[in-house]
Image (cartoon, rainbow, N blue to C red; front, side):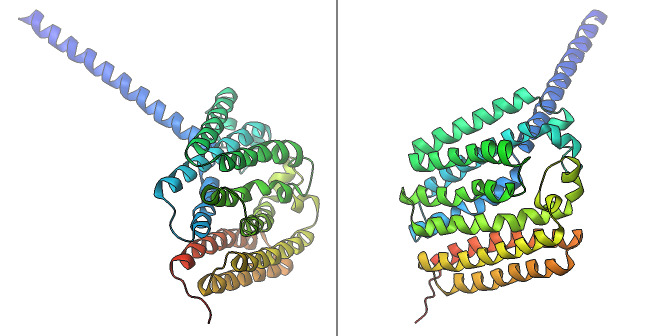
Length: 319
């Protein structure tokens, strides 16, 4: 009887150890998966996709098939995520130096460089195949081209060598608007190119505001962002110019896309505020004010593109 009791106790103990081992293994897997997700910069992906869906609605002049929207968003997210992974892989040396980025997965050693490369390759390949097979070849080529431009032109050639890095390299972030239009129309129009221009001109305002806040970080890592390379005054003057170009592009897009009063009023008000913020920054651009401008720039882009879609569904046209 005692022997039987011991056998039961040992078997229960063995089951407990196995369950604990499985629990620890699953926990490690989940934590590692979270590090993979961090490599893709999900917050940046969210911002990029904000420009995709509304443009699809404008291109369709209505609601596109939900399956098309789903495949386009999923493919675009994977393509952007893959490019961001390669960006983190290539920047892992300076990310270790900068206070803002030192806790990213690669500097902390939570993910190996080899794992990052494989993750980037898998995401980019899967994104291209998904978009090609479920959407169209043009959207797949545009997404892949944006990723290559971001990694090869911005990260490798411009970021560490030119104060205009974010201006030229920012073109990659404007491509999702083209992808959204191409997904619906299988070609690009002048309206699509103007949507690209909105994001292209908006990018320096958005990113230089962040660069002003983290100027010392970039200086320490020897990255020639404009606030490091030039004065804060010179930077804010250029930001104001790009804010005006963003404003003008948003109005031009409304004309080319035949949008109505809801969009035009939104573009006028939001563009005026973005320009006003930038002009005020010329005279009083502290790090705190720069972050307020950075925050508003996100609000600006989000509301502008959401209102494009709203305008399509609520058609208020001038007499």
